[in-house]
Length: 130
DNA sequence: ACATTGACTAATT
DNA sequence: TAATTAGCCAATG
Image (cartoon, rainbow, N blue to C red):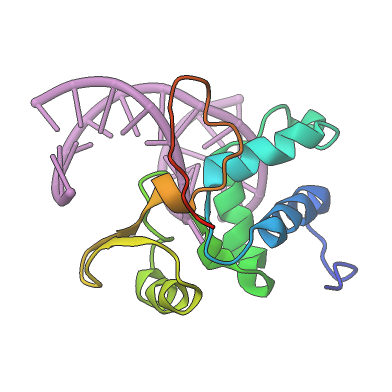
């Protein structure tokens, strides 16, 4: 992507978000908060504004997420971004992402599809994929 | 500098 | 499980 034309106040943040999203493998997802946390891992970027929030990630995705697999970044409740739930459904079916419910009212099975960025000790998730 | 808004989250009911 | 409420941070007018 050519970010040379981008004139945003925080292009580094944008790049960082998109980078993380690209690391998400097909069939897996990550919440906005997790993505923000992954960026915080780099720290060098977080220092610019302190600590990023899930909302900031969402803002960046809304503006620059067009070039990445935005459907792999979802809300903590397992729902895809607003305005795109139907479009996302198609992608999930295509990639075999574990879903719960029906197309009319569904959500991604976070217990299986969520990338484990840091589930904290105590919660045991029987991840049986492969 | 204040008020509004947004592809959010966690806790309550 | 779903709907509501309050908290959150940074961009924008």
